[in-house]
Length: 402
Image (cartoon, rainbow, N blue to C red):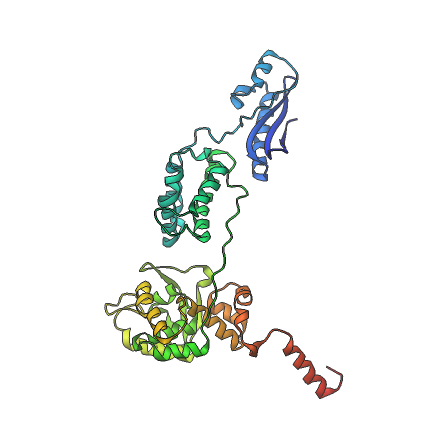
């Protein structure tokens, strides 16, 4: 009975079976994995069935094997190991460029518009120019690592190479392509055991309540309500810029987040958890009431220009946000810090973490405790002093009984 075994020194699987009294070992280039074993076991079963039926043609399965001469002559003896794989990556696979186009066309229907743009950019700017002419099955691990290293180097007169996060996004596209090709053309993906680069998490730098008050007091009046909603709802930039009046429920004081704005076009939310209802605090409710008087008759969008079109966040950031921070003497921070500010203010106020997570569009409370806890002031201290005070009060009131 034949077996699928693994060569310890390489990690590759190989066939091990007997035919006409000769022990035959045929090497593949497939790494040892459950999926690859299952694939080769099916081939092994087919070989054994043909051997039992007297229909096995050795040259059809292993056309370049050095065992063919011994099999034909009926000789027995030790079998010469053959490095040629039974399923070879170099076996008539299409070019990387042509496979990419087919792969993209098949998958774009299931991607968000923004993700399609990202993948298309990765292909056109980086991957096709590097691997386009190569057969997709001939790309090896060394070439992949060399390519990744090149992305971090200075090119085309730029001051620095791409960031680890940007490189990881490009490599993710490459990994998906090669894994799909490996599955279709029956070779082992060269992306095995390539880990993503370490990305340093960007700093969370929320505003204090004093800074928020100063900002809202001195910001231009026509943008005050916009920033009140940003600071006190935790909405993402695309969510607030894409907010439409049909999702503002004044009666129940709810903002229903259903869509987001990406490059001037309405799209689905970032994740399924992002579809949520945000409770309006009194400042937010009053700000939206004022905004309705200002833009309610201009069109569908809550925050818009004079033509009723949604705001261009890049223009607002450059023309309003950063100049205002500079004039007010506040530390320059990205507009996204308004979202972090809402989370830390809610935590400082003692709101239920599960409620905060729902307002933010998080599926769990994990991020609250891992990211924001260090910004909560002493009134919500987590160093054990609250418990000590509780015990002291109870013991003072009732003796030693807690």
